[in-house]
Image 1: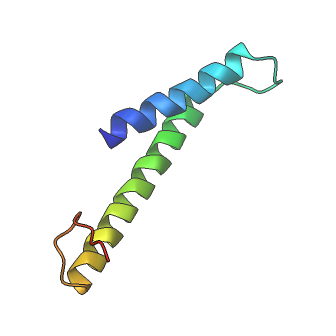
Image 2: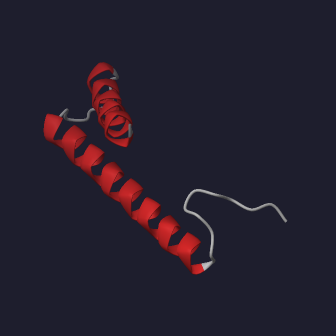
Length: 66
């Protein structure tokens, strides 16, 4: 799911740069690199969240309400 959203967002950004008169150069490589960065950031955040949950004695993805 993360990969699909990242690729779609990167493609949308490049499409807007092509469609709008912004003076920007459209590059499929930029869309791919944006998607790769988004996936890497998502995996990093997910991994850090799992480590923090284990550290605090909770199951990953389970929040607590005070």
